[in-house]
Image (cartoon, rainbow, N blue to C red):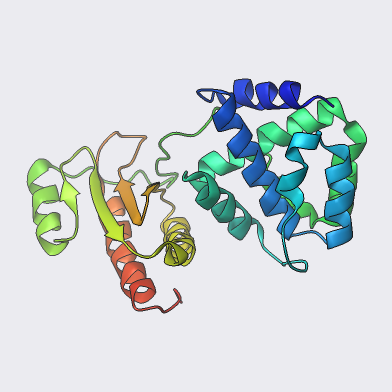
Length: 238
């Protein structure tokens, strides 16, 4: 298995800007998976990888039990992206590993919970914006209705195309914050775009299937406010 071939394959599959971004993405996925493995399994996996990637598996501590949601959030945190994007990058890496060393992925399945690898098996194109999947067709809001809703949500701004809120919290609070927001998004059959920049996390809402803000987005914005309040007070989302 050649380092450059692996990096370039992931870069091309995910359409990343350059090999450096691909390297960072690959290392993020490997390090996150490494935390879910025993120390011996990490060492064995590292032996299969190109030498330049072995340090990514040198993670400290014993095995950490993580569900699939926490796995994606951790990868997203490491690469300053969204869980949807993290899923696609993870899938690209696994597909590349299958082509280069078919037995390696089987060994990974023996060391990880099966659903962790299945989590990294998305369908479709790389996600950019994620829209509502609510089959009841959310109701589009007019400019006036969005303006009225924003009066109740002073932390948010935007228009009928999209609304945003930026939260500033210490980096160690980002993971519980994003985890809580993703949980609320699933409850409402909606999605949220999440962008991280230093201590800031920006949430952007719109219903992509309509290209506008809907009632579902306003509902999710209110739920996000509750999560921010809980996490910002050093609590955990309920």
